[in-house]
Image (cartoon, rainbow, N blue to C red; front, side, top):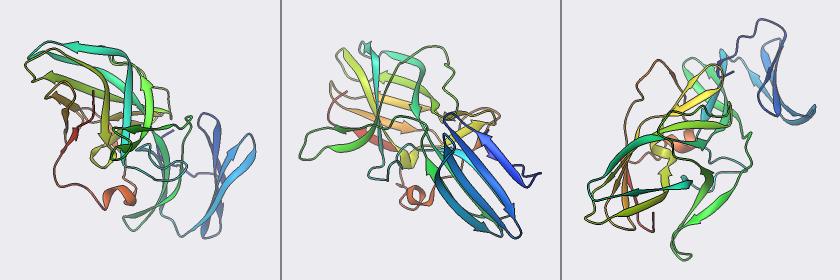
Amino acid sequence: MYGKIEQKCKVTRIKLVKRVLEFNNEANSIVYRRLLNNALEYECEIVSSDAMFIEPVAPIFVPKQITYYILIEFVNSILLPPEGLVKGYTTMPVDIAVFSMKDNEYRVVDIFSENNVKYALYGPKNEGLVARYYKTKFTHNIMKPEPFKESVVPLEIINSHNKWVKLSQILLDSRLLRFYYKREGIAYTQNIKVNVTSESTAVIEYEKEFPGDLFEARKPLKVSIFMPSHRRTEMMWGL
């Protein structure tokens, strides 16, 4: 489950995909443990916490943060004529964060992934961008993502170029992404608009909100401190 952890017992265990998260109430502390196949992966004692949360976050923290970017490659390319427009959905991976709250301030306790993690280079070797890599599909109907592993990404793709273009990938900046979730482990981003400007370039626009009755996830501080002032990014080295 995503959201606030209801700690009604001395020990609360939550099963995700491969991992179990354990929250042990010990006097004035909570001892948090992450387990894989009953083996301890990580442990942390949190003192005087008001509440604990499990939420989806950008997939850039495992095994450590080396980039802000996520490269999504489609198994089915999209071919658009001049002024062509298509709306649909895709998916992207998520990392999972455990947060501790105290007096309306929060701190990251743990970040991990239930996915197989891959990175790739977008652009030329001498000046390209390292990005978290994920291969998935573009669809017209909203798809059900894998709980605790994926997020739905609503897309609007427009061809502003005066020639036909083929889109087979999109590059997203995690600092501008917002994540929303349902308690049962389903995550969403806000709407993303891809404006193709040439045969090899595009502008990505990030809407501010996602329509719907969902919970908004917190952002790890490493991402939110250096938030760009604009809400658009560019793809400069190929579609």
